Length: 155
Image (tube, rainbow, N blue to C red; front, side, top):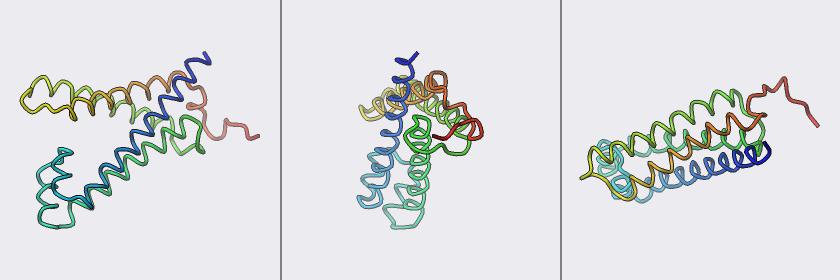
C-alpha cells in the first residue's frame, strides 16, 4: 500500500509540475505575441487579438493560466505538500476527469484529423491523459485526500 501511495503522490507532483509549465507557456504568449499563440494552437480569435493588440488575448491568457495554477495547487494539496484546500477531493475528481478527457480527445482527434497532427499536439495529449490517470489513481491510493479538515488531526 505504501508503494502505491508514494507513486500516487509522485503522480500528483507531476500533475502540479505540468500545470506550472503550462502556466509559463501560456503566459509567455503575452510577451512573445501572435506567433506564440499560433504555435500553441490558440483559437483564431485569440491569435487575431494578439495580432491587433486588443485586450482579449492577454485577459484570456491570464484567466486560463490562473485555472492551471489552481489545478497545480490542488494537486500539491492532494499530495500533502501544501495545506489542504477547500473541496480538495471534489476538485481532484474534476481535474482528473477533465485531464483524461482532454488527453483522450486529443489523441482521438489526431487519428481523425491526421493532416493536422503535430508532435506537440500528440505529446500534449499524452501528457494530459497521464495527468488525468495519475490524479484518478491518487484519489484511490492516497487516503488523506478524502479527509475533510474536521477529520484531520493537527500535530
